[in-house]
Length: 491
Ligand SMILES: [Zn+2]
Image (tube, rainbow, N blue to C red; front, top):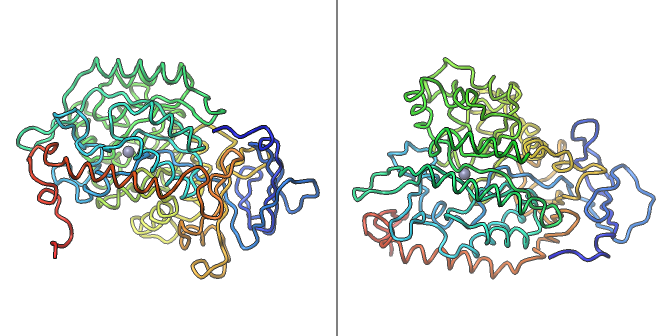
């Protein structure tokens, strides 16, 4: 899947559009501008361009933005998590049931894991591209070890992918009464971690630099402190990122307070587990969140001072009836706020809009959750999360990761502030062209590396097997419709 030498040298100019271009440390609005890229890199951005070009993309009436960066995404078709679990479980208190999809005794996989892992992961990558995302932290796909398939699918996608197999000290299981229990095996976590370190050493920089390894401890609340410390040290030694699900569920907060007498952020700081190479997926329930009833620690100051990153994924929270509070305050404290798309539909436009609207509602102020704040999180915030200055922006010297959207239509209407129109009006079907690393991955709405029909059929096939096997895998032995009723009864 490598482009040939001719394509690498080819010079492309994008003309006539409204470009969100980067200059002097921030995004700028460049009307009727030109972006020129050659091979993988942007070589010129400005109001005009006199030089030669092998190909021209006419972007009149279009908005040209950097490819979105998703710092937390489960790249798959979400057969179980989206289609079956939307109701969640009462005993995990509305929060993060997706991380609690317990393993079944039959094959020790999450009982709704994709039945066809390859089809599921390919579906996920294609969906990310269709939504204008060019860089993703792929957190894994709900099966114990999907590295081989993930690597193959990542290469095929043409996207920038941050990935490594996960380590965990515990797995959740159902007991025969349907209660959830973590089953601890600390040594297994260390073995998984060693494997992850080898993965990073062997794979960092593959696919012409599009693949980057990292260290991934699946879940703060399912990891022992020694595993976390060893993982963080490994990330530091390898000079890669360290990521984990962190305080997505309320009980994580209170369990830590009960066990250690301090908050999870306090504990992370005390154990040296924060820093600019740390991406905390969610970080919702911290001191100061109204549901914690805990105002006694300065968690935000600690997160900010350490330079840690938060991946904000509002759609997944809202579906379960909660939210990260004080997004703007995280930013004001110096926390690097980035956006994750987490689960299907990996729609960054929806994430930005939901994030903006809910911050206004939660803070009871129209001045909070600005379009600029969420757009920055989805672009420059993501770049900072990955400690890069060559993505999340359209600038000479940056990678040619570019999205072109139809911005002259009934949905968008007249435009005064293109970023407000983008965040509050735009829909993914307006995304026409997606370029990553100088290669066109979607052109006029057609994916260039996939047969989209085949991908859709693959996702459906994988889901149907879960449905068919449900009563074997679920502790109750009941058919799926008894456990998770659909909205209306059958005719
Ligand atoms: Zn997640």
